Length: 117
Image 1 (cartoon, rainbow, N blue to C red):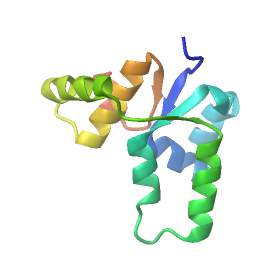
Image 2: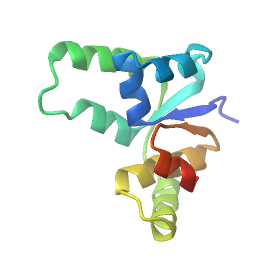
Image 3: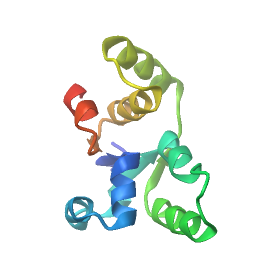
């Protein structure tokens, strides 16, 4: 076992960055060292057109406290199956497949995605 327990998706991390009460309440009892994020989440967070240098720095500092999970062939295969079974956007399917491949929980506020897991 890799010691990871959670995969934080993009909307959850945005909530943390904005100080959203629900995100902060959930994360307050969790050590970020047992959390991870997908390559997709990193791309989504850092690709906003109006992102400032300070915001980029804050995002990178938060991500540095967690474990990065690259897209592997296993994640690709699970993504394909997930999209065949559920009508979801490709980034959401990759994130769901990443959690499944790692056998960890997904922390998300996307109720439609959570219902498909």
